Length: 351
Image (cartoon, rainbow, N blue to C red; front, side):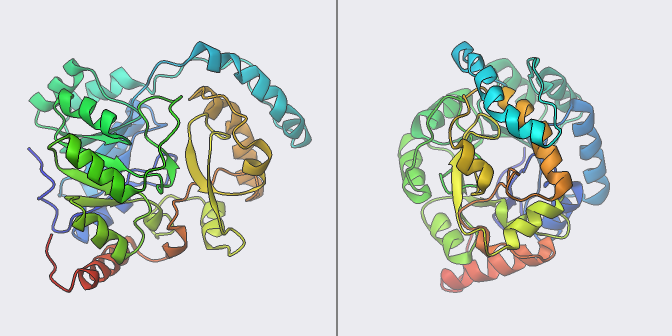
């Protein structure tokens, strides 16, 4: 079974749902000695299997697949969706955009994805937004798939350890995109990554992957020095040639006018960190914690903004280290960051 010792370098390209993670990015990170991840979030099972096949054609090294775990939606939160729709409706009408009135339940094609991964296993599966059932975890374990749970607290870490996962991705508040809390209504903690790593290490005895705000070698070295077996970066790869990041998103990451990130539920109903813009300022945390209903509600507005290239209305995921992201090939990102890490660690090159 796959272990975190297999990549040449303990550096992981985070799975980034919405198109940024691609087979080309996975293959490039693998070729540079790291570990690439596909993001199955927001994809059907068929689209996930297609990406897996494409990736296998590009790299013969192990790679991971990340799943969004569907969870129960608070009826009270769902009751707030019409109110939020009413708040968004005037700007939608100004843009000639229709907002859905009825949003069907969405379980991320979960059962079909699990079935596909059982039938054609990959080396590594990670979970975001929760945990699989014991039966599902046991099934993947039986076909040789290693499993990683994303956790944001010591309590979530204990629950994941009790399930028998192989490692934990400890996601600090500095991370870009969604915070992977196991419940949508959880208010994410603000304990910095290094302190969170320490708390999780004290709670469970599992290999840890550090994630959140790790855009420079000194930060990578600090996380590895704090007990992480590997480090996971997402924002650092958003401007890479091989990433599927949209042109407006790339432009915003390079635009000096965007100086601040904020955590908001305004786009999806789940707490997520991104570049502060007019949309986040207007709607702040008015959105109910009704994920993924809010995600589907705002999707037409976001699509229209992307078509216009309107950076003030887009969901621009970014971590606190977004200023360190560069427009360069993914292999150069891996090599540069690991060189910086070695320098920060005194040139030892130790894992």
